[in-house]
Amino acid sequence: MTEPGYEDGTDFGDADRGFVGALVPGVVRDDRGRVVWDGDAFGFLEGERPDSVHPSLWRQARLCARQGLYEVAAGIYQVRGLDLSNMTLVEGERGVVVVDPLVSAETAAAALALYREHRGERPVTGLLYTHSHIDHFGGALGVIDPARDDVPILAPEGFLEHSVVENVYAGPAMLRRGMYYSGANLGVGPDGAVGMGLGAAVSTGTPSLVPPTVDVTRTGQEETVDGVRFVFQLTPGTEAPSEMNFLLPAHRALCMAENATHTMHNVLTLRGAVVRDARVWSRYLNEAVQLYADRADVLFASHHWPTWGRERIVGYLSEQRDLYAYMHDQTLRLLNRGLTGPEIAEELRLPEGLERAWSTRGYYGSLSHNVKAIYQRYLGWYDGNPASLWEHPPVESARRYVDTIGGTDTVVARARAYADDGDPRFAAQLLRHAVFADPAHAGARELLASVFQRLGEGAENATWRNCYLTGASELRGGVAHTGLAASGMAAMLTVTQLFDTVSIRVDGLRAAALSVVIDWNITDLGETYRTEVSNGVFVHWPTAGEGDGTTDLTLRLTKAQLLGLLAYGDTDGIDHDGDLDAVRRVMEVLERPDPDFAIVTP
Image (tube, rainbow, N blue to C red):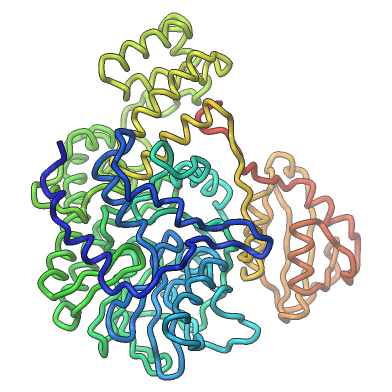
């Protein structure tokens, strides 16, 4: 029996409203013919729901799988269902301003081509990034050519810094964890991935980063691009560290970026990120109501479908506002009573008004992991109990737990009993210890895989489902590496940011005795830097010019040559004075991240 409310077709009507045409077939390939997006794979969602998918998640997945070009308002169009995010196109006097060009150049180009098929060959006359997540800027090279197209690129203050921090500095770990929360290796279908709650899936084409040329630094700032007037609301620290909403006054249309979507969002994503501030998130949503509700007839965002009509816009934003405020305030209330993150997550419930709204359901974020994130933001990892200060790491703890319980076979038997008695949550906890203590124990691995599968099939949250099912898959078949196209992001980093990526790869103990000083003259940029390896640290800073000759090495090279040197150790054609072997000595202490590190096994 389904829950009340399933007969309400309002969201489906909104998701279908303004449909112009779809990409047929709904498949995008790269230059080598590799499929980087297959929206048609989600066609199974139009069939009968199987028992292997939560009914509420099935509903959300059907909404997210809709694909095509849609008219939002006169002169505003969205392409949905060609990537995790939406691409919005605002028609100007000479061409079209593109907002949030998806993840990959290939899907962005396909989205622009679909728009032009129905609206004519309008040139791109501006580009706008609402925030610093890759699904909102990665496809930039699919819609513009920076060497040819001299167009303004607008972004919120701090965009470039935060894009790099999130997508490059911790990129390898986030990518590996992202394989879990996105279900990238599961395959699409009723027994695998049915979506991500925020959209159908993430494309696997070529991401890029084209730096902005215009910074939005304050709420109320106005910019006119190709005759289109944008009025901005800066919202730092909300869904992204650098984010902004905007109003199109002439169209009476409000874009909420990713600050208000048709799901409870993440305060901390399962792939990892900086913990977001639910308190200021709520306040910026309230500010949006105060600033723009009387000036907008339609609200759209960078995911999901629009909302039309002032009363509905205010109701929707108010629910979203109250959702983040409630999670924040109640978590603080309970932590000040002494409850820990897991205890708060178990106790806290949403009030009826928020519980029954479809747009506040936990399809992408969840109440459970969001309140733990809020706890983490204020109190950190330590729960206050001294026993938590110096715990053994997972493998050593697991061996001791298993030994205490009586061996792996006993642990597996007890876990099976808990699973059979309807407690797969604790069965998973026990079996995690069994697998970490004895990874070759086939019975422990298979039982944990089956428990994960059971938990995944019962999850309303898409990312929880994907994590559970991916864990089950890797326990049974090992890690299935997903090779992604080479990113174009490195070329867009500043020299300081490039040196930062070196710093975080230094094996500190191997480099502890190394002392190397190098001057870098980046000839095509007219910039000079000094780097020093000291006490296992790679430090760097800009200088006023070439050094005084007391360094181990002075290099004169272009930025392209710098990229080649850092990526491959290539010094061919680089002009230098001093000991070129100094580069090798530095490169030898750099560690390459493992893109396939173990998660459900030790």
